Image (cartoon, rainbow, N blue to C red; front, side, top):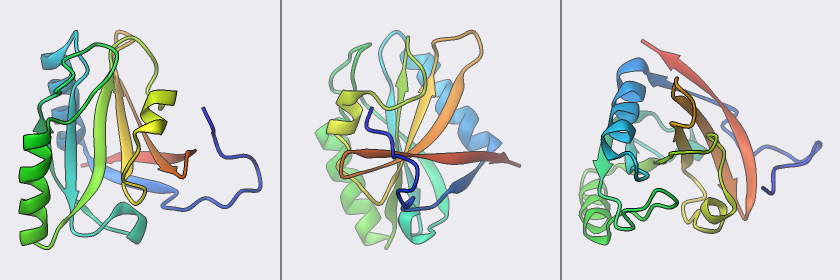
Length: 151
């Protein structure tokens, strides 16, 4: 993973807050889609990179239907792109799960990170207790983002 080296400026935000209900909904979707990876989006009022606020979780179909990779179904992506534009909203986070590995972006995830202003949230089901982690992926470089789970 091309993780940012010390001294490289973090593009921000350094931390984000999500409600416990939203985090639980992502975990529930990951469990429901197991053994395949799940995917979805968090829509916000602005991109995370611009200090946006997450508004809601929207699960999507994984076109790849694979335990090793995800692809948001193109019909879902088109419908959500149109809906968010009409509502003057943005893709705040791109979300997917890892079924047997940690909640860290894989080389494939990094190569498919097409939304540099979004947060990338990963839900890992590799352990008994699910793990959720947040990242920014900008120009192939991965930056950790502190995830604060609020009320």
